[in-house]
Image: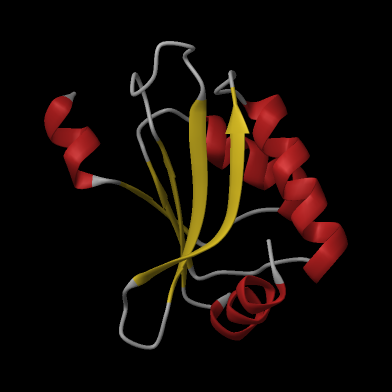
Length: 111
């Protein structure tokens, strides 16, 4: 997270936080996890990245723990992610309870 991403997260943290990960896009099974915040135009703005070979609550807890150290507790209205509960569970563990939880419509249709 650079300074601009930190500033954007602090400015729009009260709106919606989205998580997304790439899956099966490289031969080494690395996943690029992205945390986005919806900006003034309700468009996703990436505020943090994590490159990992894991996709579980432990990895997201590490990412969110570092974000919490850098910017403090983040309190969005809504969190949106895929159907797996890893992002949500990691969020609750580090940042605390959330107001609303949404599943990405693409993942819902695929399921």
